Length: 419
Ligand SMILES: *Cc1c(COP(=O)(O)O)cnc(C)c1O
Image 1 (cartoon, rainbow, N blue to C red):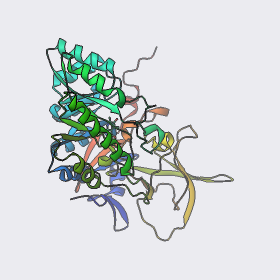
Image 2: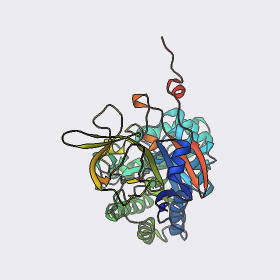
Image 3: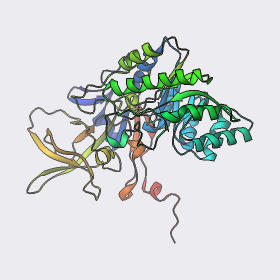
């Protein structure tokens, strides 16, 4: 079953599954990330359902949300994982993930990370350069192992998204130019320690239109045919992640099902296992950042709602000019709307969640939910301004699981030594 919305108003208060967010804030404090287990699992299952009748592997992109509880929910559903560092592999293993379903992406893998991944027996490496290909070959051969590899090619399509999360154009640092792929595969075929049996791409993130994804798929399928005709036995086609989510209530993203239906038609009967690496589309909507209003401040021109969360907790608005819906936890029909900037306490003008936003008037102590914060939220958090990072709470029905405890001041200085 697909989650319609795992955050709903009940009796005038916003709840996550069966847990009232007001009560949750009273017990665990704010700011807090709140995730719905059902929301995460059901979105993963939607991919699985849609792919049921073709060979496939869905690898959750760990960088979107790497909390152990989130990873273990997905591991239990049978997910694979797309990692971009040795640290992410360490997390996957700690969460009970199956290393044989892990693909290792990333443009700058170190030899130590490659060795660790080989020793753990991951599924494959998405190799992004000839330098990496040689490093993989040498490292695997020295360990007496054989690495299954895919070359991450750059299909040169415009993903039409924010420039910081667009990755599939020739001018980007990612992947190997598709025009050079044939020659590099031919080289890879003759190197010890590696078997080239996949092709991969990832053109960008927060894609709301299916066209660029299908354009990339078509270019990749043409590449598969070219490679096969030159004697490379390609078995895996990895189309990366990138499916967008509705950050605005007016966004109409395509569903995992729609995307998969389109791709499935193209690859059916070609003897390929389809791999996908969704991150955002599995966890974004299943999470919110819960925050409390500290004060409301009026200056000559503007009203500022100052909340206890800040850019160090959720940097997407500051970093990508991202829009997040912000809603009151308690509905109150009798208050007027105000137009305000919703900002945090950090000493930066860039510390904001919304500019000129119309919201129901709030008072100090009121709770707000910053929606669609389950992806690229906590993972991008920092201790800037010496602010302890928030707790992460995973809700399962009526049950609250503290997925990460709130940091303390002692945590802030752990590992530091005064001189
Ligand atoms: C970031 C990333 C993903 C996940 O992208 P989403 O937009 O979160 O689905 C998948 N694959 C690779 C290689 C990535 O870098």
